[in-house]
Amino acid sequence: MYVDISKEVAEALLQGRPAVALESTIISHGMPYPRNVETALAVEETIRRNGAVPATIAILKGRLKAGLTPEEIEYLGKQGIKATKSSRRDIPFIVAGKGDGATTVAATMIIAARAGIKVFATGGVGGVHRGAAETFDISADLQELAKTDVAVVCAGVKSILDIGLTLEYLETMGVPVVGFGVPNLPGFYTRDSGFPVDFRVDSAEELAAALKAKWDMGLSGGVLIANPIPEEDSFPKEEIDRIIQDALQEASSRRIKGKGITPFLLDKIVQFSGGRSLEANIKLVLNNAKVAAELSGAYTRLKAGSP
Ligand code: PSU
Ligand code: MN
Image 1: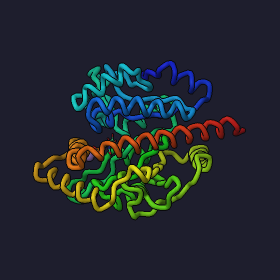
Image 2: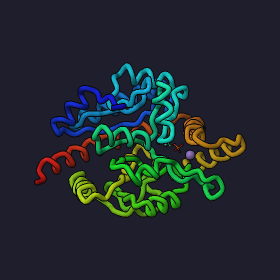
Image 3: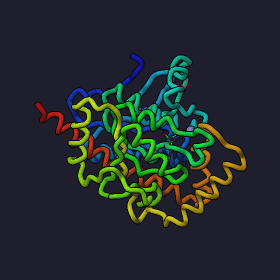
Image 4: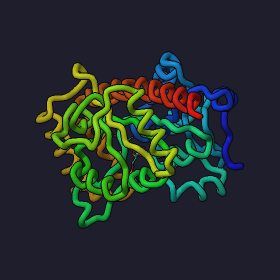
């Protein structure tokens, strides 16, 4: 009802071809214009090159969109933080008000699931913030992973969050955390956060088999797949930790709270790293797009072959 699936995405789904969902908060709130638009288009291109159809997701004029045109991506990118960052709680109000919303991981999962898309690629997911025992700041992304059947390929958890608490929360919620080719959870800008994952997989096929088993058995909810940033694009841990400390310090002295904190910290990290974190962010998203396309391909092949 409320969802518009683009022609290209609808055809792919109808024919049982692989599709990959992409979020739009990373476009509006995660990167500056015009790099955000260039990146969003390059991510779509990477997905196509790896055999799947990209479905960038957003809310436009109150319609839930699965699959945007390049013009719509340009529009959202130009809007930047003027577009409403929309998570689960925001969706009904943006829809009823016929507004525009950039979707977070949580909202993107909801719309992807409605469209029938099982695999989603992004950069970073939200999690349990540092100091959450006081602030209660826990991203709605984690609750969504607990209940919505979409596999999310990310680059691990950024240390703006409390990585240990985020993993504890996911364990409680029954969300498997998978390392793609690695035994430890990647730390977004770095390849190793020091925290072990629940399961390591070394191929898209192996991962697809686990997704199929989970959902065939009716074990609802998502899976968090962490794919490390390529070595040559990664940051030395001490350097990025210092930058993140400075960003957290500034957020705390300016009393930034709620949904504004993640975009604020990301922006400060870009500033304090002299723009290098932005380049790393772009590289890791492209890397995740490739894995997600391969995973979606493996999953659709497996489903087609099943009795
Ligand atoms: N982490 C990143 N980049 C991002 C986000 C998180 O490294 O762009 C965005 C994603 O859209 C994610 C959202 O779903 O921030 C989480 O926000 P919050 O913590 O307010 O739930
Ligand atoms: Mn929050």
